[in-house]
Length: 151
Image (cartoon, rainbow, N blue to C red; front, side, top):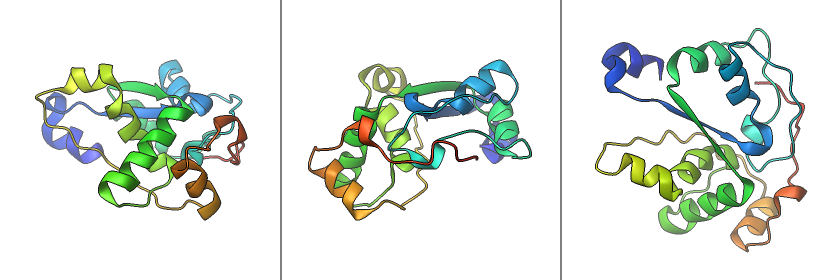
């Protein structure tokens, strides 16, 4: 995001995606400062929890992200299934966030006929969790995550 914004400026729109169950970064950027908010369990455990006060993540998101989307747990699970089934890639919930956002009908219509790049990062997912997601048994309420983790 930093490189793209430096190189292309406003010709590039960076969209941040957070799980609705743990939208600390989304809310912090909106407030203009790091907030200490509670988080619920989420399949996107790589983005769950708070933000470390010395982290560069907040500053990058605050300066580079043009708009934010929030996605619900069932959409994250569906996106993870889509990536595995359609692209044969094993990814974790955090990597599936951007796919979940793009699979949303409103967002798909918004970016129709535009160049879109999805930055997916993370493949660390336990076999039990992956099997539940793939089998359609994943229940967002039963997600296991360190909701107090810091980015």
